Amino acid sequence: MTTKQMDCALELSKVLNFSRAAENLFISQPSLTYQIQCLENEIGFRLFERSGKGAELTPAGAQFCGELQRIRDELKAAVEQGQNMSSRYSEALNVCIPMRSCIYFLPQIMQRFEAAMPHVSLNIRFVYEDSRVDMFLRREQDILFARESELKRFSNVRMAPLFHSRFYVILRKDDPLAGRELLTVSDLSGRTFMVGGGSPGELIAVQNRIVESGQVSVLNCPNHETALANVAAQKGIVLAPGFTDDHNGEFAWVPFDCAESISCVLGYHREDNRASTRLFIELAQAAYAECRAGKALEKPVNLHRAQQAAFIEDMI
Image 1 (cartoon, rainbow, N blue to C red):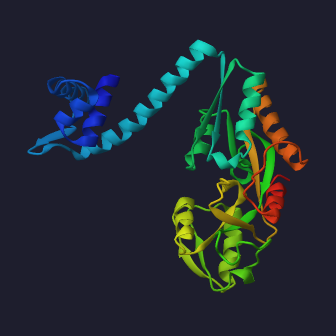
Image 2: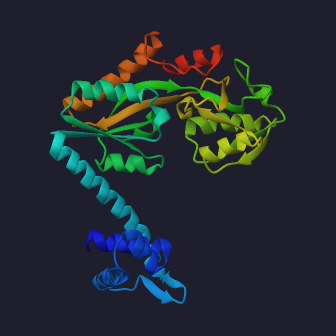
Image 3: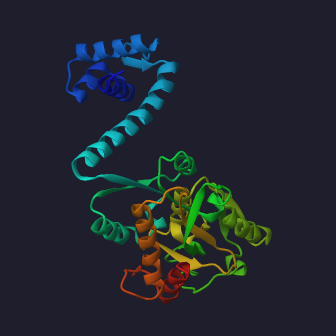
């Protein structure tokens, strides 16, 4: 199977029209048909059925093209990394992070790392799903940002502590509670409180305590992004760890009064003694240490005084 055959099948699966797919790929329609036929002959089943309106995916074709897209994306990324390595670098360091906000000082860390080790290709990959842990355990990634509770059961993984993340109530900025320095369960009385979406155990414990107080109504929510949309639409409020705050100023993040927090770490493989791995971890820890010490690293400027203080407490 060639990459050309992959691209032809994937484009046709999207537009379901031979003429349009050929035009998008800058090839002739007979050439597209030939590539599809060669691919179907190789795999032993039909991907498409011609129809009066163009083409339709067979059930097997729909399943195959879904997997093929993932394979093609991974192949493209591997080729691009290989091209970078061959031209500029002698080593690669792969770091997996759920979202950019998890490591607030990531840009500064990257700059310092690349200045110190210009021969190392620093590859940051953002994977929100739980599959990121499996990717790390398969050694597809060298360093993983994670909760300590996610990694502590694996004996072949070392953990470097980064910070403890507190919990915040996310509100619209025009909410009467938005200017408060700290919120308690009683402050949330009468509100619609969103839960769900694969919350970590540390967060679930606090959510359950709020729900069991009987002072809030509950709305189940599938994920963090949906919860934020619901907050913006005045459908409810939500509790979240501070490391999910992108500091874009759209919402008010008010600290919640609870003892629980999430211990955030950088996981790395026990046998990985490379200088590049050690340097990235040391730079990340140093960035947060500098923030705690009140040094020059940039802190969010769109928070009021109490929330700025809470941001610093997250770094402890």
